[in-house]
Length: 265
Image 1 (cartoon, rainbow, N blue to C red):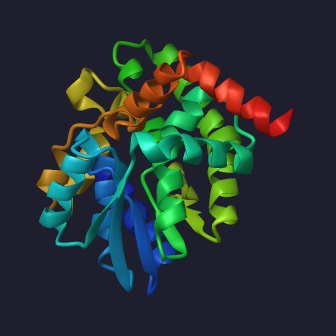
Image 2 (cartoon, one colour):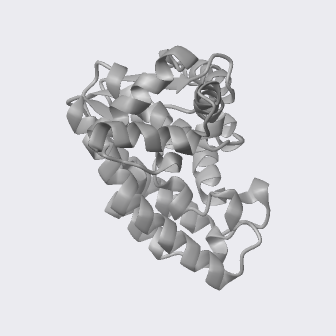
């Protein structure tokens, strides 16, 4: 790997995070993975305070990983429980605030919704955008250069045109602001200057190698070595919403459709 790439990304990311968090009380939407772990590690050098919040089912992958990593980072950590009892009412609340009807978007956005709803801090920082910029999704492995380039552009486009507006509506509703250090122009400029070959994952374990190198350079090997699950699975959200739907004798997609119609029709 081209070492100057990771050094350039490191400088850009540190710079972006410093300017966003300097002197502020910061909540981190924290999955205990590479993306949010790296953001938390850098933020703690510049923010007035940093607290990590993980939203998920008891003993879910994210919750266990996040608690472990919070101890390694020496940062305060809070678990926001997702349960069968609270998930349907929050799903309903999120649909009414955002008007989002995509079952997939809703499932991976539920953990962040719980964070926005719960934290006292005004500013919430997270790892959004890292998978799209640094070729982090599983599906990217084995793609040709053309396929990868198209898929990454398309996924980044979706993130900016639908995910970020959804999250902004949620944050505004609760009087919060979400910070996106990976989407900062300083960072995207460095990524755009790289060869696709430096981002292209050879296998599942070599995804986001540039970011893993940044974590290693900054002295956080335990962040560099983290494996990641998709938010809706890592947090246990998908299990819960499916269970709630099953009890009603319908699929999760039908449940979303039903709630959406009740609110908007």
